[in-house]
Length: 209
Length: 209
View 1 (cartoon, rainbow over the protein chains, first blue to last red):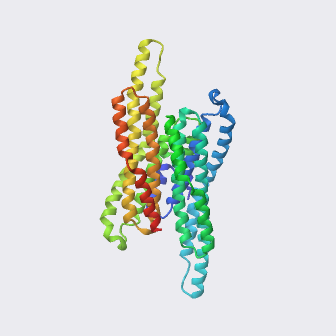
View 2: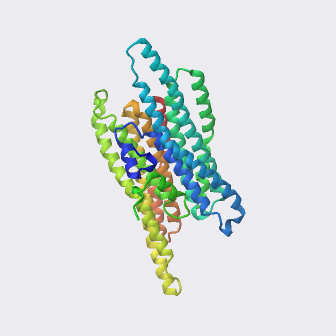
View 3: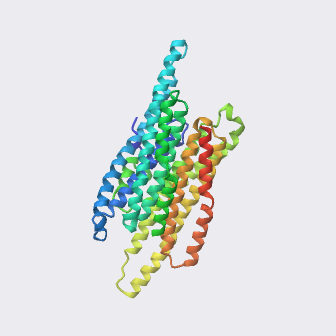
């Protein structure tokens, strides 16, 4: 079966809408984050090399390197979400006839729940980075495409809040509460102040239109 | 050239990131709205037919019909955004040597700016509908996939705020201020209270996880 990133947008949406469990919200979150990163790259690509923006040339080149790296990371996360979900479902499907089966199954589920927490947490962190970079693009990018920095910040924010939901789900089933609380604290750190920052960047862009 | 919806996600993101003017934020907004609609359909498809959710069966069937119609509408808007942008650029490229040329060019630009206002306004309205439907999905959908209703509301919100930016841009260049103000008032109506509603729906989903 081909990877989601290689499927057409229409087919991806068909599969998202279907009763198949994957792809689901986790992949959608990564796609939104990747769109944010791509739009930041677009702003950079349409700013770099323009005499009018020579002063911010180096900043834009640095931003482009970061946004392109994030785009690749987030592209990979579309598949990572499906993979970890499928592996988790496989654990839930393990035999539970004997007490030994049950203990084994429960242990495997708990191991996989850790990975199913780490994957969306990493997606949330990558999306948060696109938000931080959106500020630079909004402040310094070519005014002719500044609205794309505004779309980037909203896409990154949607990806962040969406990925967070998957962290909440999977930590809630974790028996290792120390690990769960540590991951929730990491997420809390990432989300801290983001609502206001996103609104501020959006307003900054809107005021430039 | 093939339509954007027929391109792979990876190619779409490559083109979004490139220095080509299209696809840009307007298409990204429509893709996010279509993802919202698709996720709502997924929640419906995984709720309908389950004995446990028999009580909301009819609501979910009605919701599915609406979300699927919205998905098709938003899928079409990915291309509509590119088309209107290209037509607007063609108008800006018209001859401006004589006074008659200039008058003709200016008139054509103004005509096309109206269309370039209507297209993202329609996208904003469709995205706002996905937000309204997300509340139904969040309240009545299968708890096992309720997080997808939360992702849907964030995707719809990102699409709404992104499409709004394109309405702001194009109305700002319109000389017919009466038309421009009327369209901005329509947009204002659509956006009214949405920040709080999105936060409320997200919280509703989070509390169910």
